[in-house]
Length: 236
Image (cartoon, rainbow, N blue to C red):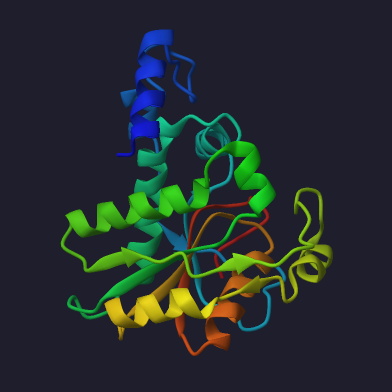
């Protein structure tokens, strides 16, 4: 746990945290709400599905308690929520790895956030949750690491409020995979299963663009793992 996370957790205790699910005082996520979180992930295909999208998995629907967790971390900077969100993302990644030989190395690649968003929030929530998911998977014996291989090019605008076509146009060619990060990965994990990670899948445009950028440099993306999928998604 980073010093920043420890400071924020201490502040929550001193100032009096309340559960993001039921507003009960004491913890950011009370035991009752924690027990109500999804326990298994499933495939969630966007409608329409971007051409060539790797199988997308999500632990739950982007609604109610799961939505409160995502917003709590991303918008309210409640860093104590990184742990439960990482556990949910780990569920999705574990489902995506079903059938993969136990000894295979796995690399979780977070979808990059816009630099302006990171500066505004003071941290990269997607990267933080991805790192926590890797810790959960390693605790269960998997050979998992994270690699922040992707970067956004200038000109990408906030996706909020955009429909599927507008999101795809906004993101086309917007993500790149710099050679330096790729070289580091090659030294650490010359052969590995690659999974793209994000907090929420909506139209699939972001995940597909991240996948495209990785495939453009020769990597094969096995799947997309997300904490949640929007209600307009359904299993196919």
